[in-house]
Length: 171
Image (cartoon, rainbow, N blue to C red; front, side):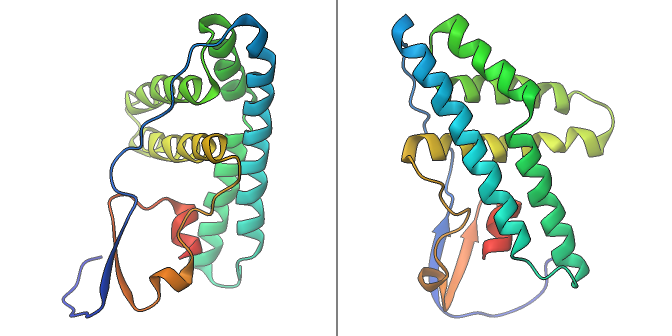
């Protein structure tokens, strides 16, 4: 909710705008390695989300809900249908995994958003957040936390455009 308040501190802007996805066409000999990179990245992201959820104090109902969201995001990251679509794009279009993820997420999100059930349509946001996390892991070569280190934010006013559940939990 929104309420009246006053705060003083350094302003930290987190997650500004859309990041650019590296796009590359691949040779036939590079496809197997790119497929393996995608599968490994998805597994690492899913495991990181599960571990973040396991660290939470589940006795608080709000925190338990956040843990459920993290588990759902982990499941999305390893979803066999999602993986099959990404791998098909890598193989068919000879493109890198990040680009294939971006295209797959865009297609699936459009389908979800077209559903008349508002709850289901809203899952497009979750799907995009999971895709962004897998892409970030692919491009960085390591699983990044969803949010910046707490010491960076201590005593700060944090401004975000879109706060993923994983980032909210880690904040």
